[in-house]
Length: 293
Image (tube, rainbow, N blue to C red; front, side, top):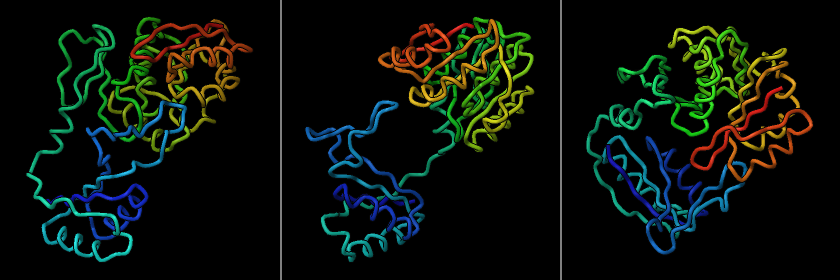
């Protein structure tokens, strides 16, 4: 493969990316052309808040092509376009062959939840001390066990013995929390998400872990549950306050994650008419909020 690197003003990124795709680029990545310089500017926002800007002032695009000829032709054709004004070709270079699957897999190691409870990718052997193991590989849906919010939810489950209980995982993503509850002995587990791809991922991951659960769109969640888990973000959690609280059975528990420490009070206020939320765990700036009925 060959990589064509270009720079352009921020307002030209979309047009240039579309043109590269039309010229059979295998992939296009965009980075800050001022990275590591005094003019470098972050382009991201905290969860629940809009990003501070939609594009960098100066961007660098890296496009991969199947061969050198395709990359060279793309550079020539782009240079002739009106929208290429202010843009420049930085380099055209061969990309060394690599085992991309192995490189990707190397980024994901087994994740300890407790000394005996682990999340382990399929290409790893579970640690000797692992008694309960969730087998989960990175995929399209959120939830691999590496994020603090996921780890706190699983840690709470491990510490509250869900054996024999009815559990709801609302916003299931990869299904990791639902699978964890099932492996820990929950009597019935229902996992729902608004994204059909997440539902499919949950079903596939549950099958890979040998557990039975129900997965579907939100209307599948019916009745009261002994444990209601929701690892989403603060904004949707506030909107869902009456719905999630209404699913908590007598003597049941509500467990919420995806909340930053600074958002604790607003979540407690949002849920106050139904349930009194308390901070049950914290990690890396995130909090786990729980309430009992």
